[in-house]
Image 1 (cartoon, rainbow, N blue to C red):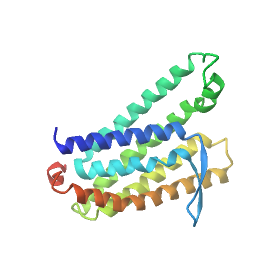
Image 2: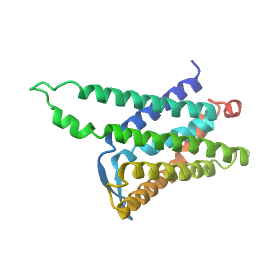
Image 3: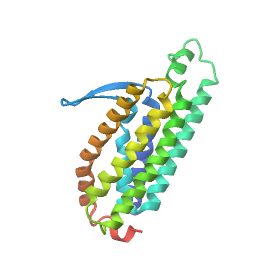
Image 4: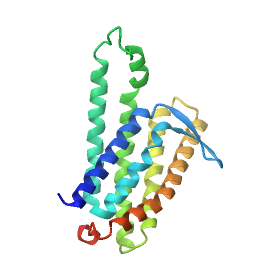
Length: 218
């Protein structure tokens, strides 16, 4: 197996693991204090920027079709997780089980609504991210990686954050709470996007000579 194929599999694994983790821990909201601002965000946001970092890397190295493939694979993986979470709830816990039925349900009882909301937002946002990334790539003739990386993420993350918060909390939270959650979530994701830009540049630089980027462009 060639290195470029091995690296694609590794990136895909990181993407799917990050996405599944997002869905499993998204019920918990946390304070993230970065010194200049305290962000109130879902714990699921913490690994989520990795998914956009990976899709941008795959888009840059392997092209739009491979990026869309990993996005769809992540959706299928999340559906499998949802299925087995449901199956786990169909069997009664034994008396000596460390996790009883009440504990299990308290963590995963919202999984259906949460993952459904997350997947709707996820599909829209990830495909928007990939599409905008390649739009800017063609427009700039493959130059200015920082522009397509951040430009695609800014738009797609706004869509993702707005859809998830609105689907889950309209009618549950006050309008001001919803606006605050959208703004905090989006700004936090934007900050992560700016941080991952030099990471993408570094990875692309390290891979020069190992992966023929021009050969893989569509």
